[in-house]
Image (cartoon, rainbow, N blue to C red; front, side, top):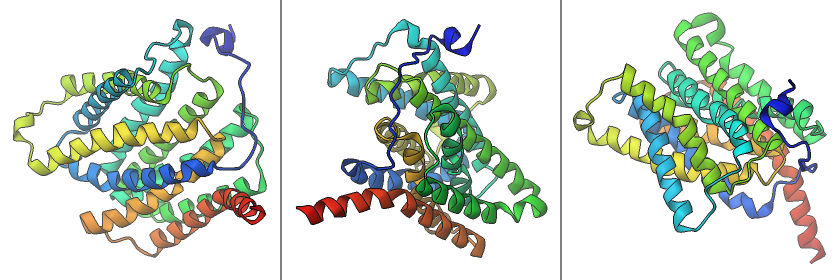
Length: 318
């Protein structure tokens, strides 16, 4: 039995072919980058006191509940066709379940800034996978962004590969999380689900978060009444901002742009993650971190250049 017949996937899907990032979504991308970037040191602070599975499982479940309430209040459709159940479960497995377990465990071994940068190699994997799965073209802009991003990441982790077993463990986990997120992103574009953004995110958080939360109940014991105010606030931020708003914003962007463009446009997030880690956690990035961030910044520019070029051309005509 073929994969398409097993999952009842629709072959008639539409693939955006251009490299233009929608101008109307640039503001949302900017806010998303700040909030998700700040979440890296926030998570680092939270899991120092709250066990990993409990922290992320709780955020996923309550994030899902919040989004379902928002969808219900907005009279947004929550139900989806039964024949799309398997694809929704597959997307949730990679986007939520594997991603959250791998990246949060990796964060326990690495500085928050470095974890953010390694985890955001996701765009490199999306661009690669989208060529084969989505038939998206490897344009000059994407190739440039891919090359710059890969160079920056390689520079960042080169030291850990030979000098630090602890950091290498965290790096491998964060890298695996990036691949998982990339697979989920490509699956989401290749096999869309008939849901609006709010309901789509809610179902993913619920389906991916339930096994994490269940694992926390079985494997971890923690008394919420013993958590400090700081740890509780970190969990609250993770739930309300990172899970509800940021996930909604990301899927809004991802479903309205080509997979490679959407993925590469998120490369501002690790920059925010590194500098917020310096401020909030007194982390001290070295020259490798700053060189890597420079490469990532240039990679962002290569992705947004077609958008800005089109915008200025239209302004000149007007």
